[in-house]
Length: 247
Image (cartoon, rainbow, N blue to C red):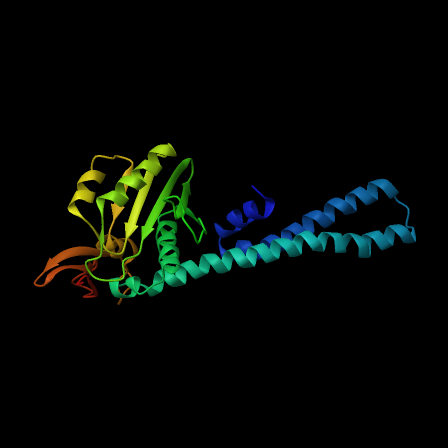
């Protein structure tokens, strides 16, 4: 793993304030370390060379890693905040289904990030080998397969679920999530129930996973209404906010 990849993962997990402070901290640490080395080498002499190194050369050298960290921090936080904006703006199946496949993957990544996972997009435009996201949480590792379905009633077949189960088994992973904005066929659901490491998340589950009350921003929960299942604010009857699950 490259230094920049490691740094990107590290910075993307921290709050914005910490990310902003990191370049300054790097500059100060590098500057102080080199200044101490120079002081040790030149001793207590007040020569012009020492002054030039301490006042000009060392700060320039210290500025470079601080500047690089700043670039990575800004990019990582933009990505992180972009996920949250996308998550916050998509609270119904219609808007979720209207997303491009890549935006859908980013939305799913944001949902798992909200649950404490560190989510990494695979980033391939071609065949992805059945994996769209890598998830990490402590020692846990998991993969996610995303299937965007743009139309109501869009099914994911049992064949797709079997292939994904094979990827989980081949990778010796503890968990795999198959996510779709549509629905799984009964055969797909039956097969998944036989694979402990596999969890299916369909369109209705997505709204539970992502949903917030449109009025008070509290969580929502599924309830049975006159016209079918809908997502109701957990603060009901104090708040009557709801999200429609009608296809």
